Each structure stands twice: as C-alpha cells, then as structure tokens.
Image (cartoon, rainbow over the protein chains, first blue to last red):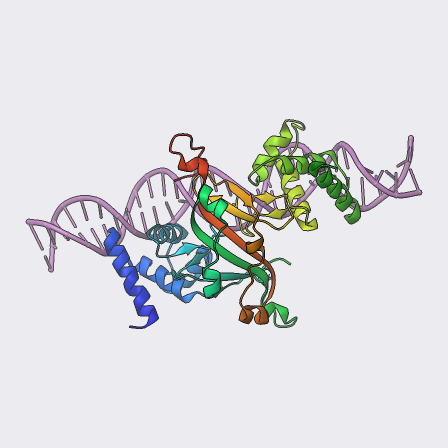
Length: 153
Length: 153
DNA sequence: AGACAAATAAGAATTATTCTTATATAATAA
DNA sequence: TTATTATATAAGAATAATTCTTATTTGTCT
C-alpha cells in the first residue's frame, strides 16, 4: 500500500476505534490535510474541500480539525497558534519556518531527534515532548525576484 | 548596577537610539514586562500597569508591545501565539511549557545553545534562530493538591 | 514657553474560533 | 431495507485577541 493509502487506512481505523462516524466531510478534510503542503490552517482546508463540497461550513472544518487533533491523527503546529495550523505527519520530524512567507517546511534529522533536556529539568518536570524549531528565510524568499511572500516583512 | 537597572538602562538607550519617546506608559509597560514571571501577555501587562495608570488603554499596551518587539527589546514567545506572550530576556535561553497551567519557564543549557541544524538545511535556508522547546507537566501541577492550573485539561 | 511630530484613549472594526440550534445522516439493529 | 437514534452538520450568532481610526494629548527639540 502506498503512503496515501496507509494514511487513509489509519484514518478509517482511528475513526472506527473511537466510534466516530466516517462522514464524507471528514474524509475530504483528512485528504485535504494530506494534500496541502506546508501545514494548512482551517482556511486552507476549507478552500480545498469547497471544490468538492461547496457547502461545507467553517464550523465543520474547525470542529473536525479539533476532533482529529484529539484522536492524535494530526497535531497542531507549535502548541500555540492563530491562525492555527496542522501537521498530518505523525512520525518524528522537525520544522523550519520562513519568517517571510510563513511556509513551514518539514525536515528529518536523527541527531535532532535525540536532543535531550538537562538533568535538572528532567528531575523537576515531566517532559513529554522536545521540539526543535528553526526560523529564518527559505530558499524561495532568498531569491529577490521570485519570492512568494504571504506575510508582512 | 543591578540586573533591573541594567535592563531599564538598555531600555532607555534603545528608545533614544531609535528616536522613540520615553513616555510614562512605555516605562510602566517595560517594568511590568520585567516584573511579570512566566512570560506575560497583553492582558497581564495591562492588569499590572493599571494599578499605576488606571486609564491605560489596551491599544497602547498592544501597540507598545509591538514597538518593543520591533526594536528587539522583547521577543514574542514561540513566533505564533494568541494570546501572544512576551519574553523580556534577550540572552540565549530555552523554554519549558506546562501543558496544564500554561506557565512558561525559562532554563539555561549550554549544550542546547549549541544544537545545530543539519547541513542540507543550512545549504538551502538562512537559519537565524534555533529554538528548543520542552512541553510537559510542571512541578506544581504534578502535585495533585496544590495545582495552580489556569488552562483546560 | 512654543511648535510639531509622535503617542495616547476610546471605541469601532477585523480575524480566528467556538457556541447554539434546528436539520440531516451514518451506523446499527429489526 | 428500512426504521431508529445518536451523532454530525450548516447557518449564523457570540466571543476573544488584536488592529485600525480619529480626535486629543504630550514628549522633545528649539
């Protein structure tokens, strides 16, 4: 089975397992999540899904993203965020965020996966996640002409 | 000079240097930033400043935080965030965020300061900041009784 | 002290998100 | 396969954080 199929399969199983109904809206939203690169927000998802279901409501998009998030099918990027953006990739990986166009680009690095907090922190707090996030300017925005900037400077 | 004095002094010089006026509101807001632990948001700042200037407007608080942020006197926590929270400490350090009470606790670690992105990323992107963020449950919230939780479970 | 650009207060406007309610529908069992 | 029922949905109101607009005030530099 290919990656997309695997994901869709996991999605169906997760819904079943938790007793959530497999509605066309949910399927379309999950497919849009997988298709949208650079970590879509509710608005991106809504736009993508509307090409198939023109009457989908924003509320459904938000509610569904929250639902998926609760089952662990997707993760909100950063923990804090508004407009909140989501990541449908659940395997360990890291993020680079472009300060200019606000794209968030995945990357994988074994070394970073193993970054660990200092002992005196581990003794005091229960640490469940360690996130390494890079910020800077992406390849597209570095080229003065072809920049696809979507955010303020 | 003590730490507080140093900071206030840097603050005055930064304002002068950029041609920003030294208004009582700005001074009060900057002092509140230094005094508030765990990375205050606009509401926290407003509450603190109101004890001295009861008529300060939320707009002034927001506008001033944006101004400070632009001069690099403070940094927004996380990059994305709403309610946005600020960090008046500009020396390199790291954050632990408690998922239960939402406190953000500073910690220092030389090893983490030296975490570096993989080469293939550095070749493609201009990386200006590397942030290591921990999430989990803090010491206060681990003690079932005395928890000071302020956020949803 | 006087002039002027910059900062402020007040409140309207905007944006992202959640809530409310009435209707529709997926899953289940008859 | 249809009837039942709990769950999901659409529509739009409500909320929260932030920004914008405008008229007024106030640092700063003469």
